[in-house]
Every structure is written in C-alpha cells, then in structure tokens.
Length: 141
Image 1 (cartoon, rainbow, N blue to C red):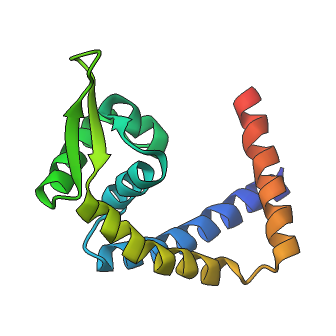
Image 2: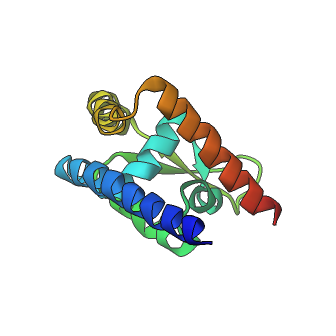
C-alpha cells in the first residue's frame, strides 16, 4: 500500500510540473489553457457540436459556451447550425484560428518534447504502456 501511495504522489507532482510549464507557455500566447484545448480540438478534429466539446477536453459543459464566446470575440472560432437538427450548434475554427494554431503548435509541441525528453525514447514508451495499463484498469473497476 505504501508503494501505491508514493506512486500516486509522484505521478501527481510530475503531472503538475509538466502541466504548469505547458499552461504558462499557452498563457503567454494570449489564450488560457481551456481556450487552447478547444482550439486544438477543432483544428485536429474539425467542427464539433458544442454539447460534445466538454467531454472531449474534460470540461464542464456549462463552461463551453463561455469559452466559445471568448474565442468568437477573438475571431478564432465561429458557431454554425446543423443543417439537419436545429437544436445542434457546432463550433468551427476560423481561418484566423487555423493560422494561430499553425503558427503556435510547433513551438508548443517542441516545449512538451523538451519537458518529456528527460526520459529517453524507451522510457517514454514504457511510461506510456504503464500509464495506459493503469488508466484502463481503473475504467474496468
């Protein structure tokens, strides 16, 4: 049991350290981490129903409207209605938003790589496998 508790603490602290560094870099670009997560989702996955964005980026659905409003004010995202169901509203990245991501993302990815590269490639693969195993086992409980 002691080993499990220690792993939990080490895992939590490692995540916090990496996450704080990445979030600080995102904030320097003029977005908050939640705005960036929405932008990244829309860039990589295309337009998304507002109702589904929260689940994909682990954010409460009530906050999505606020975040999309802020991104719309910056002209990074636009809302579009569904042609088949008037109740469904999509968020879609604009060209300005696409330009922003294409400019910022390579530096963002490099920063993450630099943070993680403390572990060599084999260690990274091992960490991925172990963390997947942990996460999947918890979902089965």
